[in-house]
Length: 229
Image (cartoon, rainbow, N blue to C red; front, side):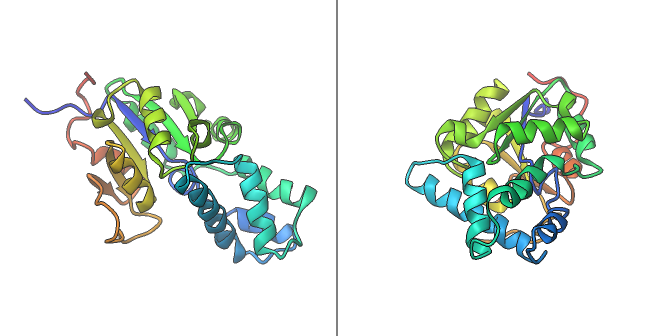
């Protein structure tokens, strides 16, 4: 008897379902070179990871604004910084984002979005992108006390998915996210569209694909028509 697909899927949002590149133009409007967009995002993740390493957290907007000030020598602050952070909710999902979410729902699986960004931003983006109806619940990592890749956010997503960790699959474009989820006991599937090659220093994903829909289908392939149990 083949094993059915997981009854719960957890999706990372930014870089997995939603590309960040359009933010380059908002940074340019704020007087910041577009090439600094990735540096800003990496910087804010670094600060969130550092807080998580000592069991702490901070509001996403605060971390994002501070990181933006740091990389611009505090030239972008106040309303200009708010405009950049607010623009996250105005981004568009990948063309195949809805396809990935629908594929995950096959067999009546619950779908959860787990991101380090604040839940209000995530919900606004999903609603604007027409994907809100495909998501059962949004979990803000910081609400669990620490950002990913600390264990607590993944376990909070597992609870939201209403299935055991071993029957909950995380889909993400980040190898560090795979590493954290596996340590928390989840099944993992990595989409290679962002990083291309999987770093050897992290735990290997259980499945992978070239895009989010392929990463979903790679989890127990061929079981798409089986009901979740």
